[in-house]
Length: 259
Image (cartoon, rainbow, N blue to C red):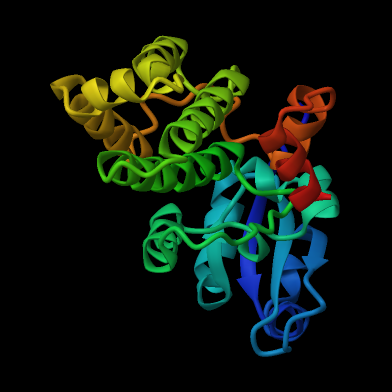
Protein backbone atom coordinates (compact mmCIF):
# COMPACT_ATOMS: atom_id res chain seq x y z
CA UNK A 1 0.00 0.00 0.00
CA UNK A 2 1.38 3.39 -1.01
CA UNK A 3 2.21 5.70 1.86
CA UNK A 4 0.29 8.95 2.18
CA UNK A 5 2.50 12.02 1.99
CA UNK A 6 1.35 14.94 4.14
CA UNK A 7 3.03 18.27 3.32
CA UNK A 8 3.22 21.27 5.58
CA UNK A 9 4.84 24.72 5.45
CA UNK A 10 5.68 26.63 8.61
CA UNK A 11 6.70 30.21 9.21
CA UNK A 12 9.67 30.13 11.59
CA UNK A 13 11.94 32.71 13.19
CA UNK A 14 15.73 32.45 13.51
CA UNK A 15 16.07 29.44 11.17
CA UNK A 16 19.66 28.65 12.23
CA UNK A 17 18.45 27.82 15.73
CA UNK A 18 15.60 25.73 14.33
CA UNK A 19 17.88 23.68 12.09
CA UNK A 20 20.43 23.30 14.88
CA UNK A 21 17.73 22.04 17.25
CA UNK A 22 16.52 19.48 14.71
CA UNK A 23 20.03 18.22 13.98
CA UNK A 24 21.04 17.93 17.65
CA UNK A 25 17.93 17.50 19.81
CA UNK A 26 15.47 15.97 17.35
CA UNK A 27 17.56 14.15 14.69
CA UNK A 28 14.62 11.86 14.02
CA UNK A 29 12.98 14.70 12.10
CA UNK A 30 15.86 15.21 9.62
CA UNK A 31 14.11 12.91 7.17
CA UNK A 32 10.99 15.10 7.29
CA UNK A 33 12.71 18.29 6.17
CA UNK A 34 12.01 19.21 2.57
CA UNK A 35 12.80 22.90 2.07
CA UNK A 36 14.06 26.02 3.82
CA UNK A 37 13.41 29.50 2.40
CA UNK A 38 15.32 32.21 4.28
CA UNK A 39 15.07 36.01 4.16
CA UNK A 40 18.76 36.88 4.40
CA UNK A 41 18.44 40.66 4.49
CA UNK A 42 17.07 40.64 8.05
CA UNK A 43 19.14 40.60 11.24
CA UNK A 44 19.86 37.09 12.47
CA UNK A 45 17.66 37.49 15.55
CA UNK A 46 14.73 38.72 13.42
CA UNK A 47 15.25 36.51 10.40
CA UNK A 48 12.16 34.74 9.14
CA UNK A 49 12.02 31.61 7.03
CA UNK A 50 9.67 29.03 5.59
CA UNK A 51 10.28 25.45 6.63
CA UNK A 52 8.79 22.81 4.37
CA UNK A 53 8.28 19.33 5.77
CA UNK A 54 6.51 16.11 4.80
CA UNK A 55 5.15 13.27 6.86
CA UNK A 56 3.83 9.78 6.29
CA UNK A 57 1.21 9.88 9.05
CA UNK A 58 -0.71 12.50 11.02
CA UNK A 59 0.72 10.98 14.20
CA UNK A 60 4.20 11.82 12.92
CA UNK A 61 3.06 15.35 12.01
CA UNK A 62 1.50 15.94 15.46
CA UNK A 63 4.70 14.78 17.19
CA UNK A 64 6.81 17.10 15.02
CA UNK A 65 4.61 20.12 15.78
CA UNK A 66 4.57 19.36 19.51
CA UNK A 67 8.34 18.95 19.82
CA UNK A 68 9.14 22.01 17.71
CA UNK A 69 6.28 24.19 18.98
CA UNK A 70 8.63 26.92 20.38
CA UNK A 71 10.07 27.50 16.89
CA UNK A 72 6.93 27.35 14.74
CA UNK A 73 5.24 30.73 14.31
CA UNK A 74 2.40 29.56 12.08
CA UNK A 75 1.23 26.84 9.71
CA UNK A 76 1.06 28.64 6.35
CA UNK A 77 0.38 25.59 4.19
CA UNK A 78 -2.94 26.93 2.91
CA UNK A 79 -1.66 30.44 2.10
CA UNK A 80 -0.56 30.61 -1.55
CA UNK A 81 1.70 33.58 -0.77
CA UNK A 82 4.07 31.07 0.84
CA UNK A 83 4.25 28.78 -2.19
CA UNK A 84 7.55 28.56 -4.08
CA UNK A 85 6.46 30.70 -7.03
CA UNK A 86 5.26 33.55 -4.85
CA UNK A 87 8.28 33.39 -2.55
CA UNK A 88 10.70 33.50 -5.49
CA UNK A 89 8.89 36.48 -7.04
CA UNK A 90 7.96 38.54 -3.99
CA UNK A 91 9.72 37.15 -0.91
CA UNK A 92 7.88 36.73 2.37
CA UNK A 93 4.51 38.51 2.74
CA UNK A 94 5.82 40.21 5.89
CA UNK A 95 7.93 42.38 3.57
CA UNK A 96 5.03 43.77 1.55
CA UNK A 97 1.73 43.09 3.31
CA UNK A 98 0.13 46.02 5.11
CA UNK A 99 -2.80 46.96 7.32
CA UNK A 100 -5.47 48.72 5.30
CA UNK A 101 -6.64 50.74 8.28
CA UNK A 102 -3.12 51.83 9.21
CA UNK A 103 -2.73 53.27 5.70
CA UNK A 104 -6.13 54.96 5.99
CA UNK A 105 -4.96 56.61 9.21
CA UNK A 106 -1.80 57.79 7.48
CA UNK A 107 -3.87 59.27 4.65
CA UNK A 108 -6.09 61.04 7.17
CA UNK A 109 -3.02 62.48 8.88
CA UNK A 110 -1.53 63.74 5.61
CA UNK A 111 -4.84 65.17 4.43
CA UNK A 112 -5.08 66.54 0.88
CA UNK A 113 -1.38 67.20 0.48
CA UNK A 114 -0.20 65.21 -2.57
CA UNK A 115 2.26 62.34 -2.12
CA UNK A 116 3.32 59.37 -4.24
CA UNK A 117 2.60 55.77 -3.30
CA UNK A 118 5.27 53.10 -3.62
CA UNK A 119 3.70 49.71 -4.30
CA UNK A 120 5.33 46.29 -4.06
CA UNK A 121 4.63 43.67 -6.69
CA UNK A 122 3.27 41.13 -4.21
CA UNK A 123 0.74 43.43 -2.53
CA UNK A 124 -2.93 42.43 -2.46
CA UNK A 125 -4.68 44.06 -5.41
CA UNK A 126 -7.90 44.67 -3.50
CA UNK A 127 -6.01 46.45 -0.73
CA UNK A 128 -4.13 48.66 -3.17
CA UNK A 129 -7.29 49.59 -5.07
CA UNK A 130 -9.10 50.39 -1.83
CA UNK A 131 -6.23 52.66 -0.74
CA UNK A 132 -6.37 54.48 -4.07
CA UNK A 133 -10.14 54.83 -3.79
CA UNK A 134 -9.83 56.10 -0.22
CA UNK A 135 -7.31 58.68 -1.34
CA UNK A 136 -9.48 59.85 -4.25
CA UNK A 137 -12.46 60.14 -1.89
CA UNK A 138 -10.42 62.41 0.37
CA UNK A 139 -9.79 64.80 -2.50
CA UNK A 140 -13.36 64.52 -3.78
CA UNK A 141 -14.82 65.55 -0.40
CA UNK A 142 -12.32 68.41 -0.26
CA UNK A 143 -13.36 69.54 -3.75
CA UNK A 144 -17.01 69.50 -2.66
CA UNK A 145 -16.11 71.90 0.16
CA UNK A 146 -14.39 74.16 -2.37
CA UNK A 147 -17.45 73.97 -4.61
CA UNK A 148 -19.67 75.11 -1.75
CA UNK A 149 -17.22 77.97 -1.17
CA UNK A 150 -17.62 78.96 -4.84
CA UNK A 151 -14.02 78.11 -5.79
CA UNK A 152 -13.46 78.69 -9.51
CA UNK A 153 -11.74 75.36 -10.31
CA UNK A 154 -13.93 73.21 -8.05
CA UNK A 155 -16.25 71.81 -10.80
CA UNK A 156 -13.34 70.73 -12.98
CA UNK A 157 -11.46 69.16 -10.07
CA UNK A 158 -14.57 67.42 -8.78
CA UNK A 159 -15.27 65.95 -12.19
CA UNK A 160 -11.70 64.68 -12.40
CA UNK A 161 -11.94 62.96 -9.01
CA UNK A 162 -15.24 61.33 -9.91
CA UNK A 163 -13.73 60.06 -13.17
CA UNK A 164 -10.74 58.64 -11.29
CA UNK A 165 -12.99 56.80 -8.85
CA UNK A 166 -15.21 55.39 -11.60
CA UNK A 167 -12.14 54.27 -13.53
CA UNK A 168 -10.76 52.42 -10.50
CA UNK A 169 -14.10 50.71 -9.95
CA UNK A 170 -14.51 49.77 -13.62
CA UNK A 171 -10.99 48.42 -14.07
CA UNK A 172 -11.42 46.18 -11.01
CA UNK A 173 -13.54 43.69 -12.96
CA UNK A 174 -11.98 40.65 -11.30
CA UNK A 175 -11.71 42.22 -7.86
CA UNK A 176 -15.00 43.74 -6.69
CA UNK A 177 -18.58 42.47 -6.87
CA UNK A 178 -20.14 43.51 -10.19
CA UNK A 179 -23.49 44.62 -8.73
CA UNK A 180 -21.81 46.80 -6.12
CA UNK A 181 -19.42 48.25 -8.67
CA UNK A 182 -22.20 49.20 -11.10
CA UNK A 183 -24.26 50.73 -8.29
CA UNK A 184 -21.38 52.93 -7.14
CA UNK A 185 -20.37 53.98 -10.66
CA UNK A 186 -23.97 55.02 -11.37
CA UNK A 187 -24.11 56.96 -8.10
CA UNK A 188 -21.01 58.96 -9.10
CA UNK A 189 -22.45 59.94 -12.50
CA UNK A 190 -23.87 63.34 -11.35
CA UNK A 191 -20.38 64.31 -10.15
CA UNK A 192 -18.88 63.74 -13.59
CA UNK A 193 -20.14 67.08 -14.80
CA UNK A 194 -18.58 70.52 -15.12
CA UNK A 195 -21.93 72.23 -14.60
CA UNK A 196 -21.61 74.12 -11.32
CA UNK A 197 -25.39 74.40 -10.80
CA UNK A 198 -25.96 70.67 -11.29
CA UNK A 199 -23.07 69.83 -9.00
CA UNK A 200 -24.32 72.17 -6.29
CA UNK A 201 -27.77 70.61 -6.38
CA UNK A 202 -26.37 67.09 -6.15
CA UNK A 203 -23.89 67.65 -3.27
CA UNK A 204 -26.70 69.22 -1.22
CA UNK A 205 -29.06 66.33 -1.97
CA UNK A 206 -29.46 63.27 0.31
CA UNK A 207 -28.17 61.11 -2.58
CA UNK A 208 -24.69 62.54 -2.07
CA UNK A 209 -24.75 61.77 1.66
CA UNK A 210 -25.86 58.22 0.85
CA UNK A 211 -23.02 57.87 -1.65
CA UNK A 212 -20.47 58.91 0.97
CA UNK A 213 -21.88 56.41 3.47
CA UNK A 214 -21.86 53.62 0.86
CA UNK A 215 -18.23 54.29 -0.05
CA UNK A 216 -17.11 54.47 3.56
CA UNK A 217 -18.85 51.19 4.33
CA UNK A 218 -17.38 49.50 1.25
CA UNK A 219 -13.82 50.68 1.92
CA UNK A 220 -13.95 49.60 5.57
CA UNK A 221 -15.91 46.37 5.14
CA UNK A 222 -13.78 43.49 6.48
CA UNK A 223 -15.76 40.32 5.77
CA UNK A 224 -14.77 40.14 2.11
CA UNK A 225 -18.44 40.00 1.07
CA UNK A 226 -17.85 42.36 -1.87
CA UNK A 227 -14.63 40.70 -3.00
CA UNK A 228 -14.31 38.18 -5.82
CA UNK A 229 -12.15 35.05 -5.84
CA UNK A 230 -9.19 36.77 -7.54
CA UNK A 231 -9.27 39.88 -5.35
CA UNK A 232 -6.10 38.96 -3.46
CA UNK A 233 -4.01 38.41 -6.60
CA UNK A 234 -0.57 40.05 -6.41
CA UNK A 235 -0.57 43.55 -7.83
CA UNK A 236 2.04 42.57 -10.43
CA UNK A 237 -0.31 39.93 -11.91
CA UNK A 238 -3.20 42.39 -11.96
CA UNK A 239 -1.14 45.10 -13.68
CA UNK A 240 0.15 42.73 -16.34
CA UNK A 241 -3.24 41.21 -17.08
CA UNK A 242 -5.64 44.13 -16.69
CA UNK A 243 -3.55 47.30 -17.01
CA UNK A 244 -1.06 46.40 -19.72
CA UNK A 245 -2.81 48.44 -22.44
CA UNK A 246 -4.48 50.96 -20.14
CA UNK A 247 -3.48 54.58 -20.75
CA UNK A 248 -5.76 56.33 -18.23
CA UNK A 249 -3.80 58.59 -15.88
CA UNK A 250 -4.35 56.41 -12.79
CA UNK A 251 -3.26 53.26 -14.61
CA UNK A 252 -0.07 54.97 -15.76
CA UNK A 253 0.63 56.23 -12.25
CA UNK A 254 0.00 52.78 -10.77
CA UNK A 255 2.31 51.03 -13.23
CA UNK A 256 4.98 53.65 -12.68
CA UNK A 257 4.78 53.19 -8.90
CA UNK A 258 4.96 49.41 -9.30
CA UNK A 259 7.78 49.14 -11.79
